[in-house]
Length: 413
Image 1: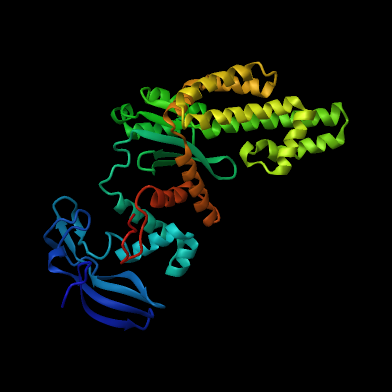
Image 2 (image 1 turned 60 degrees about the vertical axis):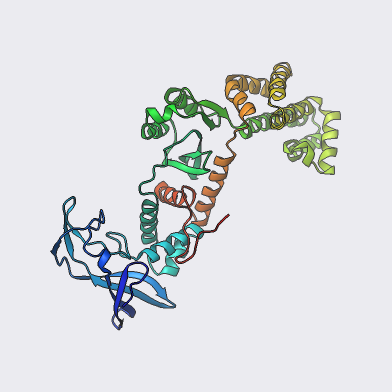
């Protein structure tokens, strides 16, 4: 009898009336027999263990299929009496490798509840399979090895200010570390796992303007160049513009008593927020009206657009962008708009990190993409009760090769 590709030999197949399933009696081939279930090394026979046991295999249509085989114990010199390894399943698992692979693929492509319904198991079982699959995939691999350029961010996964901290590798575009919570204590745990030697090899760290990130990275990776994410800097300018828009609206409503102008200013937020090149004809007309009736608000819009143009210029001429940033700071300092005066002070505080962004072209775009995919996982699962479940699925899909269906080859570029 020829052996199956996964190392098993079929003996008999029968129908179990009580369980309403197909049971295939199998045994490991000679090369894979008598090995420790933990280290997979050959070991002498110890005893019969608990006798025969079953493993859930892929269904045959609408019929459940189980593999059944003896489960003796071997006397491993390293681990002591241990259940012998079988080539078709992981140690201490009640499902075959093929079943685990299909469950992992389904968990990566749809919600765990849908996967559990189709596979006829509980969603907790799917969660355990995801953990087993990820641990097996990453066994022997060190995700923190060889890090040079990383991005750090926080993401909200539940209402009530429940956050997770995520670290990505800019060079491999993969998540390398994720933990529940945010703040100095959580990020310090990452650098503790990274170690002083590997932290000293970091060259670039991209992040937003969070003080706790700047503090920890300055203490634990002082040689790394901190890069401020351009998206967040422009977002600061948009927020300052919105503050000035509300101030203009209140002036028109309270001081001037012009309800029509106040209403127009209130409805102009999308025209002010939008990039100049993306304006519709109606929004361009709104900006023309603002320039004629409220020059101060129009000047705030020009300041926002000028700061955005600084980062656009950096993609082609980094040196010119540095000069443009200095000119913008000088303009904002004397613009007589409180929100933008405060903004230029904030930019001056983060000047070195923003300068690094202009020179290197590095941004947090990769980590923002990771955040978006994480939110999709949360939405697809209709929320999660714990961060551990979210982290397990993120590590399954974004920290390494995505699972494929059994018998399929991974896609090639």
